[in-house]
Image (cartoon, rainbow, N blue to C red):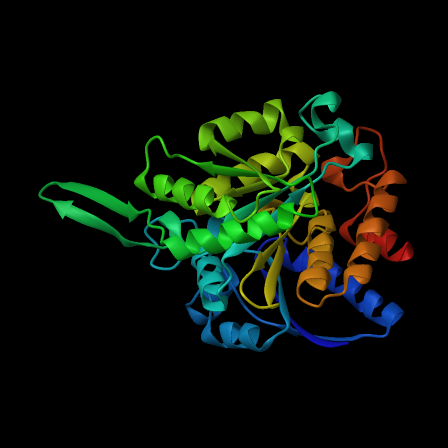
Amino acid sequence: MNAHIVTLPGDGIGPDVTAQAVRVLQVIAGKFGHTFSFEQQLIGGIAIDTTGMALPRESLDACLEADAVLLGAVGGPKWDDPRAKTRPEEGLLAIRKGLGLYANLRPVKPHPALAFASPLREEKIKGVDFIVVRELTGGLYFGTPKERRQHGDHVSAVDTMEYHDYEIRRIMDLAFKLAAPRKKHVTSVDKANVLVSSRLWREIATEMHADYPDIKLDHVLVDTAAMRLVTSPASFDVVVTENTFGDILTDEAAVLVGSMGLLPSASLGKGKMGLYEPIHGSAPDIAGQGIANPLGSILSAAMLLRHSLDLAQEAAVIEQSVNEMLSAGCRSADIARPGETVLTTMQMTDEVIRRI
């Protein structure tokens, strides 16, 4: 296969971990006889500093022409002024909208060898294996109006949480299809006791369930879902929810595995083209030091192979290599016990590559 991949390293540790994911993809290409070409573009804070825009048009155009996009991270204290006209996170929203990526997939499956790293007791995380499907282009982050208003001596701010029926239908359809080869259980998370948008969400989810009679459907309020993530996380299989709830719940779920540095994600739309990124932030305090955990980015590269390039075997090889190196005791600083040998970002990647 010939594939063209755009990389958006971004800010903080984004460049550190993205470079390692590219190394792994290059090794996979060599082992399996593929040709992957890579093109680097700007996004986030570094893009603002360079062009004044969080997502330059050149970057978006390059992504639109690519087979897949590999993203690092965006943001940092340098660009945190709430009065700033442009913020790095605007680049993320713009690229999701520009590429038509309406679904974010985040698998959560703690590794047995890292049970000690989870804040939950080992028996709580035993058997945990679920995926969160987050709607990505609707809700509060994109609804309008979104503005500040002056009322005499006072100021108010307005965000709009809006959902169209088609936005809900397409994300629910994906959730049901993902559940079919798994445990056939979908948990739809909303706030239907308060929000009108959530009542529409629940109504459509219930209606669509009739087309998937072999799938179990539960409706859970978002506060209850947040509680269950720490009291009974193994009860979930496929969790589907709207944009803001999904943003919060997936970061909570990430803690189950012991480190945000371990988890990948995929943002998908109608076609095969997708955007892949680790779920951790930019962690500017450790940027450039060579100590960031690259596994979230490497596993995101595996998701890229599976979902955008239809290379399931190659994706499984990466995932198995990560499992083997963790089982062998390879540890970065964020998942190491006191006294254990700590590997650098590059050494962690070396251990993955050695097992491919």
